[in-house]
Image (cartoon, rainbow, N blue to C red; front, side, top):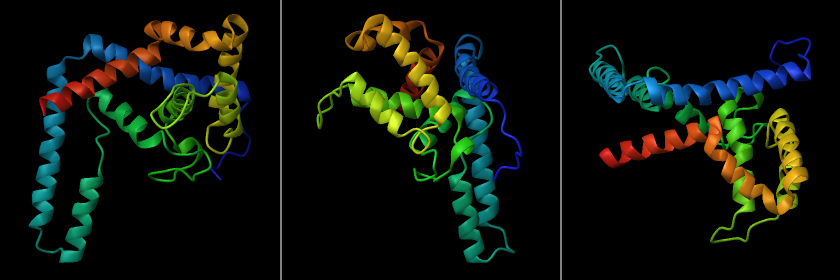
Length: 214
């Protein structure tokens, strides 16, 4: 389906998945320390100006009929920034991809397998585990074993099999060391020093600040 005649060894695929995801996360922390906020503002403004210029040109293009012009403007409106400040890209990946499913039955685009960004695939598993093991206004918190079983059932259909395997290896080790009841406390405590969680919190704060400014 993707032109690969022989699948790479499992460990190589696993290393590739981790490198892809953690590279983004570590990059976010680097950006926090070394990429000025003013640079982000300038790049955001540049993208907005380019979009406006394209919209103006399309709207007044004499050779386009109305149907072509309408379709072109719709495509322009659907574009997501993929250049410039790195937080834009990872935010778009996670927000747009963590509800996709490995088998292609998710939303919003219905993409499958490796076409779903690494960051979104990892977030999907983490998001479901977090949602299941914590109480919500519409449900009680699930036990850790029940949440693990639910994620395991989604392996290869809802979730990337490699991501689930990595999750299972980590969660089983945590259970062996701290017991079922201690998993949540350990995850919460260690999240303060975890690059991926730190990156996510940084991204959340950045986006919250942008909303407050707007």
